[in-house]
Image 1 (cartoon, one colour):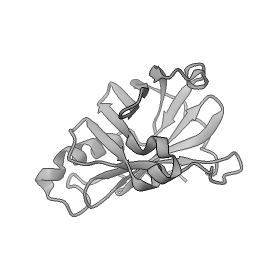
Image 2 (tube, one colour):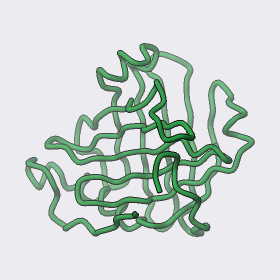
Image 3 (cartoon, helix red, strand yellow):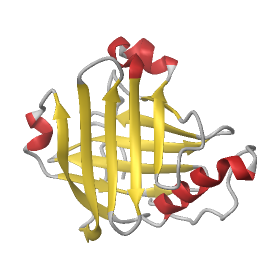
Length: 187
């Protein structure tokens, strides 16, 4: 079942309200997208990845709770990916939940990282954590970015520091699309 509830204006966690303000605004912007789906397109991919560039991309802000937001990311008929954002005492965490069609976890799953500062109202960066470094050593310098330009676009990006690895997908928030089927492993 989809759970969508608004987040109070005051931030979650134990950090000082002035320090957390940009993350609270960012979080609330995500909350306004709850239960909506949006189509996107790849605008940068280095090295090129035709498996993304030739498929329909749809994100669905499916579950919104005060401390967690789940956003399935569909690539064509592949429903294996979900971005999971959670509030922490010091910021926001991004994890990538990867599942097989039967709902079981992929062997490469739950990688991601945490913010290292307040970010801005529209942009948060997530630096690879130790689990990511252990799981995928080449990804130890990954930085994921999520940008929300309210009523305009949502951007998901990846850059690998010290390497020529870049990915950026942009989703049009002005035109919601039909809700896709649930991600693999969920009903």
